[in-house]
Amino acid sequence: MYHLLKGLHEYLTRKEEFSIIIIGLDGAGKTTLLEKIKTFYNDTPGLDPSKIGPTVGQNMGKVSLPSTILSFFDLGGQRGMRSIWHRYYDDCHAVVYVIDAQDRERLGEGWEVFDSVLSSPRILNVPLLLLANKQDTSTSMSATEIRQDYEVWDHHRRDSARRRYAEEEGEEEERKKRRIASLEVLGVSALEGQGVREAVDWLFLRVQNSRQDLGDRATRTGWWSR
Image 1 (cartoon, rainbow, N blue to C red):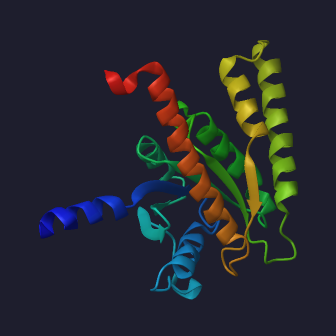
Image 2 (image 1 turned 30 degrees about the vertical axis):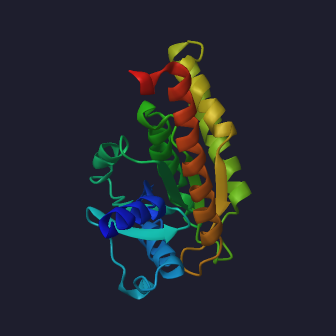
């Protein structure tokens, strides 16, 4: 009887776990963001920013929320490391792309990489959050300015492609335009913690809703009955 009750209790109180990848250029503040999340939500604080170095491979952290565990994977952003990002796409439930809102010289490079992420069909239905980091500095662009900068960059990219290939935009471009239109952009300071809780709240809600949407679609199409 004890084991039966224990098993029932564990079943009723178990938490669903979701995987979230944090990507972006090197130096964007991804690891600082992860460590701040750990500090806010775990009993053991994350690393002090002074002890954080460049990520080689990945860093990982878990936070426990009501009914849910969020597992964050901070992936290295150096040019050679970006080629492994796609290995995490199939198993992730959300993607966080961090942009350095202060480093205007690398915005173009950041948008090129972000565009390649948007182009992946493997995360088509995965919640995507764009974080404009380093809002604690007076020279950083705001979340609104970051969105506008990307929209201008994307417009130039599409215009250049049309002139080069003299073709109308295809289905993939239309899909990307719809996703860009609904893209959530939040301003954060991973260093000071500004906006970090709001970002985690957004992720918590979206992974729950995304899982529910997938379940509803599976029920309608008969996946569960096969």
